[in-house]
Image (cartoon, rainbow, N blue to C red):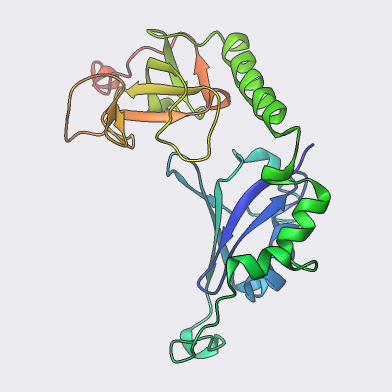
Length: 240
């Protein structure tokens, strides 16, 4: 399973890392220690998706629970929270230290920098095949939409949760989500447990402005189309 480029943030650091979905939660915490300075036993990890969903990365047995069971996506974010009391944390306060910023022209001339390494390895914007990689992502999302039979107007549920049933209202790209390509699925949930009202970043994809958050944008693999009627909370009361 291919590695996924993701952001890793903590109180002390922020960086881009490649995450392997076959890692267990315990392995992830071990690998995060030298990056964040937080011991595994003091870490609480959450996954912040591209649609700003926050998903706890935790399990009763973290040795045998693997990251592939979570909706990892390129440039989503792992937030590493330090559970130690403030008195037990290292003091990285550098507010009074004058910072040195190397001129960009000088940095580009260095041969031992991250930039030089990326150029040598043809990574990121230096990868001549980058456009083809992007097209492959777009094609993969389109195939997922087709295989799952996702279409506007179809009933569905999101994330396998019956409390998040609704109607597909939009299928396509959402330019307002930074760093994303390929199809997103806009769902109007039956209950106001979403993230928006059908608009995002000032662009309206369906419906009218509302204070109730019935809308959510998710990737195709989070949507299950089928016979999911509106849940009637009063149905069980008919025989009381």
